Length: 349
Image (tube, rainbow, N blue to C red; front, side, top):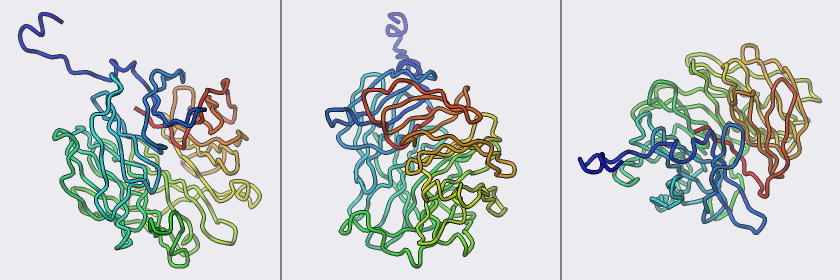
C-alpha cells in the first residue's frame, strides 16, 4: 500500500471492501429508524447504514461499493451511500413536479443512473438520467413510454432498458389514490439511447393489471409481477415476455389465483434462467414457476413474505416480520427473525 501511494496510485475500492455483499435490502428497526443492509450469500448482515426515511428498493453500482437507496413512492429523494464507510456521497432530489417510484438502474459501465419518475401534472412517466462521475448530477430525461413507470432493469450485455409502466395515474395532492383505473393501460417499454424501440401492451382482458416488478434472465426474457386493479377476479398476475413476441401468462386455478389476493410483491429468475419465483405478501405466498410454459411447480405459505432474489440455494427470501431464508422447489428453509422488518425488495449486488 505504501509503495502504491508513493507512486501516486490509489487503489480503487470494490465491493470486496464492503464485505462482498450478495444482496441489499432496506429495513425498519424496532425503534422506528430506517436502514439499508448488505447481506452475504448466507444472509448474514454485513453492514447496516441509516436512511433518512423508509426505503423501497436500491440500485447497486456494478463496480464500486456504493448503492442508491430510493424512497418509497411517492418519495422525492434517493441517497447515494458509500457501503464501505457508511457515508452519504450524494442526495438525489426529484425535480419540481416529479417524484420517484422507488427503483433505478445503472448503465453497464456504472457511469449513468436511470430513475423512474412521475411527471404528475402531465400524468406521464419520465426517466431521469444522472451523471455518476459528476457526483450524480442530473443531466437529462426521456419518456418512459407510459404512465406510472415503476421498475426499471438493464437488459443483459447492453445498455438497453426495459420499464414496467404500471398504467396508474397518481398525484401527490391525493397521496397514493389511483386516479384513472377505468382507463388505465399498463405496458413494457424497451428503450435504447433514450428512444422507445418496442412497446408491449396487455390485452383487453388484462387491462386492469398493473405491471410493477421485473426480472430478467441471461437470454433477455423478462418476467413480470403484476397487481390487479379490477373488481372482478384477476385473470393472471405473473407473465413472461420476449422482445417481438406476446405475453405468456401463468395459468392457475381460480382458487390458487384468488389466494394471491391480486398482488405480486417481488419476482426473480433462478440462476438457471428457467425458473421464476414470485411473492405475494398479501396472500402470504411464494410461488415457483417453470418459465418455459409458465406452469406452477410449487407453492408455499410464508407470513408477510416479499423480498426475493436468485441464490445458489434456489431463491433467497425476506419478510416483513424479519425472517430470512431460502426457497427451493417448494421447500423453504427459514432463519430466526432479525431485529428489523425487511422492506419489499431484495436486490442482487
